[in-house]
Image 1 (cartoon, rainbow, N blue to C red):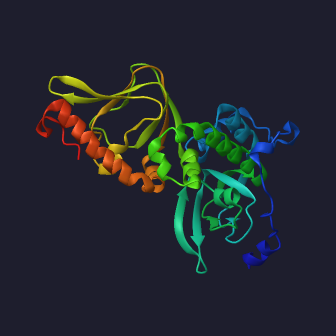
Image 2 (tube, rainbow, N blue to C red):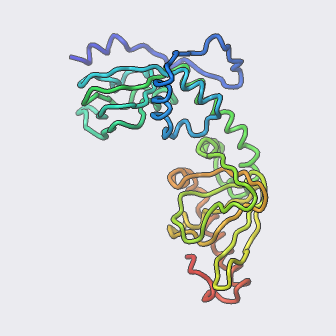
Image 3 (spheres, one colour):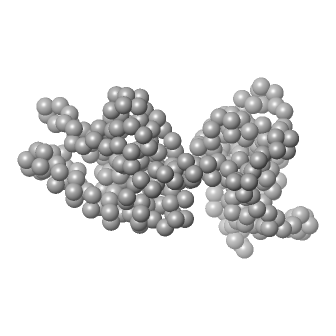
Length: 306
């Protein structure tokens, strides 16, 4: 019965396009839903772990907070129906929600009082890929598709522009197709380190790799006598990939020689996006071992890095 309820809502939005380059942003058109301090604090708490928002600057983040509105949900309510056009993106404040897909509406995921859903249909102009039903009463924060696309696509566009020069400067990434490099730019997270900061620590589990945008980084290995520098990297250099390729702990530490700006790629995105570069990285490991043997005289003197 609820399928009929939703059938009348279906209207095509797929012709709609958004061009970040021609967005002069009419401030008057911005969606703003006033909130009490208490509501804003609750919303900040709900969105702080949302991956999609990680690369937004402060101004964009405030725009996100302004544009979200509260939606009170009752148990058994359908929030999203598979096959519908996407209207809103949702962030969970409270409640339990189940995701179902396919003809047989197979249960694939439970959101328990945290997380977000609904972004795929909006980002890619596709029909809803799943049905989401509330199992309990709860509260959601919602943002309409136009605002969501404008903020998120504009942010992705800015990031692509910002990282274009960096990605051009990394020879290894020439192995990627253009669209693969755009996906990589979308996934990068800007991080800064002050002179002397340790960026990664030998022996730690690996969480990602780094591309250097600005500044110098010293790679050092811990030996009985103390740390020995084995290489010095600058813009266009990258590090941290070794542990991701070998699935071992960090083989060396990395320090900021001066103020350093890096683009961080987490391990999941690394596995998803850098497959075409894997052979180059493996070759680099061979070069790296040769280099270590030159410095330490023999492989026996160095931590096993393979």
